[in-house]
Amino acid sequence: MSSPAPARTRCATPATRNEIRRAAVWLGMAGAIALVVLLVQPLLIIFAGLVFAALLDGGVRLLGRVLPIGRGWRLLLVCLLTIAFLAGTFYLAGVQIAAQATQLRSTVETQAMHVAGMLAQHGLMPGASDINGLMKQAMSSLGRVTSWVGTAFGALTTMFMILVIGLFVAMDPRLYDRGLQWMVPEANRVEFAVTMQRMGRTLRRLLAGRLLGMAAEGVLTWIALMLGGVPMALILGILTGLLAFIPNIGAFISGALMIAVGFSAGYDTGIWAIATYVIVQGFDGYVLIPMVAKRTVDLPPALTLGAQILASALFGIMGLALADPMTALIKTAMERRSENVENAPEPAA
View 1 (cartoon, rainbow, N blue to C red):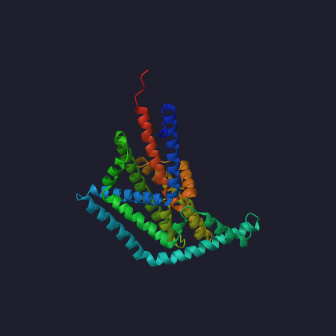
View 2: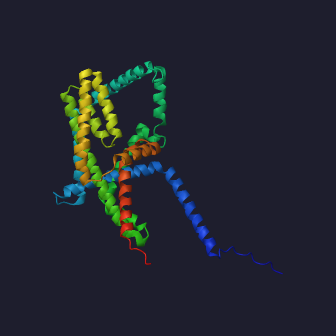
View 3: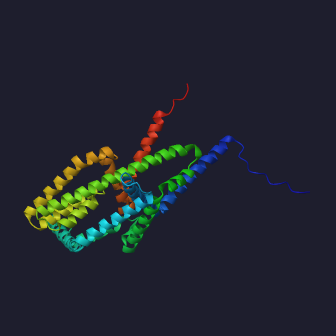
């Protein structure tokens, strides 16, 4: 007599099937979050490459208004102009920049130890013997997620990958745009395409505004410090321009360096450095940024600063540099979502 066949496990009731679907969704979300945590470093590099691609694409589009040539030639021209500008700058001022960079490091270290010693005398900080230990501990805890980028080889490799990704994407952005659209359900592809176009336009405008602000702050700082006789005016102007890419925090760091170097040369030069910092930041905050914000994306300062704090705590220095573009893209996507909700037809009664 044959044994009965094993019974099949069936989810006959709709309630059971719904619970299984919900459990699968939650498991999928947990797996996606875990995957993002594990792949946060490559994801940051890819995003940085996309930001660089948007920067190149903005230059290509700008040249397209005056040069009726192919996109590939315009991209090549943008790359050659960028390389020529960087090479020319470092060739003309390379020796001076190298000498001032070494002098700046020793000056900042001396000024920092002097201020720390004064605070320690008044009981506001630990003794001088503990300051180096605190500094090492703070630096070791900074950017735990991307600590491998801190090495010289890791930094060069990361920069190379960012440049390569940016160049490939900038060569044919539509190819990658279509690829992303194929990964979206067909019913949502049109809306996804519109959102991506707005995000790309927002990113290009944001980067254009940042470059304009960086150039203005760097040149104005260099000229003002040079007129006031502040040492290392060139390297301070370059650092101010580079740090202007990170709003709020970059201005604070450049101001601290500027004031420290100014007071190292005397009381009068220190006062001049403070006045330079106030005037340049005032011009940037009350004249340049409002003018640029009308044509670019307007991010509230508190929102930007909060995003920078969170991104730096989670992703280190690279997250700090990319916090502003991340916030702008999220803001654009949420604005598009709110437009769809407002324009959606009301359900029939």
